[in-house]
Length: 221
Image: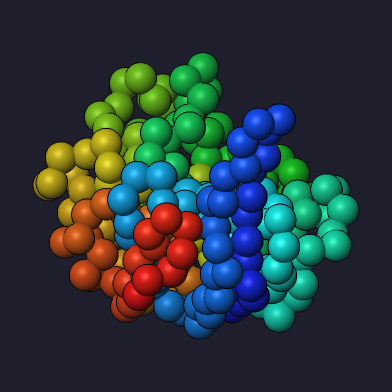
């Protein structure tokens, strides 16, 4: 489902050159749940952003479902992301002025769908995360765990084949974190969704199929 070939990412300023990723070669199979771990600043989020087509590598190739993404225009990249990928962030990235249902519908606004279809898909996604009774609430009226559930619903509303999760349990206590992890595990098992998760939590990482470790931008395991 995901192939990274000889990926390097270099950040340059007038005076400094920083190698964020160095010769990363990684395959993620369809339906696999992969964890990425490593110390802060080792390149985990950079790697996730490159897989998610939010950032381009300095060199190397990214293939998603056998399709090369390197030469796609910004418009085609946006369309590709919207159809194939769902994103979950540590800080939720919800819009506080929008109700839960409207937050979840957001990715569907970029597709050719009716308001009725958007609402139905959003309700189905919220049911999957156990929040169908919170559709009229605003994010500020929810707990951290509930907000992360809304973020997951938003990530899956378009039925993506791949979910990319950046520290999805990082802002939660252990009980809430376990609940969120259980939802991700269910999505992976029941729907066959491919998931790549960046985490600092070894306990959570051990629940996934495979663990990749980064250190100073290089893959060490």
